[in-house]
Image 1 (spheres, rainbow, N blue to C red):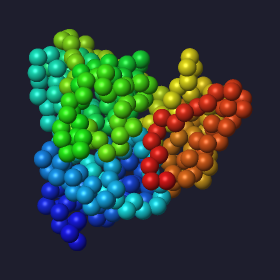
Image 2 (cartoon, rainbow, N blue to C red):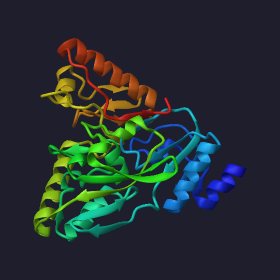
Image 3 (cartoon, rainbow, N blue to C red):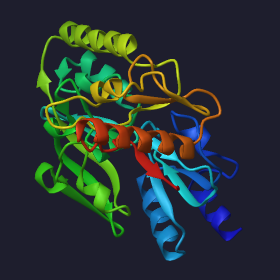
Image 4 (cartoon, rainbow, N blue to C red):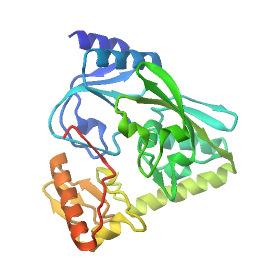
Length: 296
């Protein structure tokens, strides 16, 4: 009861939540505590409290890259719904980690600021996209991030682009699970607002035409190997449209494994493992997972 009182006094608290509620693939078990801190100071207090009480925790964005196990999570999931403000500063935007990327992209386009168009259709938060160095159309977050504000051991610290150690779908935050991305400064360039909006519309139209947006998914399942595409290899082993219980390899884009109704993480992982084994056998290529597996 003490933990409930503490969390509810510093954020919006839910005790009846499930990972199904907070992941785009709509699967996973129950969550003991789900809290959205009211502001940055409350976030610091909550993280400090959880560490002192040795309560496991993880910060979530919009769960658009997460596969969560069916078992209950005896810890706290933190969402930064209220930590989503932004301001402009000398050709850059300083934006808090909870800001939704499509919303920010629209704000930037209205200001004639270019740089985030490649990510404008990704249904995640700035913090989430920085965490995984998300990208599309030969661009990624590492190309526009100037620096990242991080909560480390109760203190706020700015890390430069180099210190974040970006690489393909990876950042330093994968190696420091207790660090919390709080905000970032993004490099932008001036451009014609209409040109920016046209490019964003083109990107969205292409997403709709090539990706199974009508089915719950976690986006691309596998990283592209060097000089090739994961979808091509999955196509090559005949897995387009493959079904296993409530899981299906999309017949629209084979690198998307979707929840076809009642799917769970265990079936997702079994399907992914089978794809990896078949691709290894046929092409001698080791496909690496792009999605994050949690609580499995």
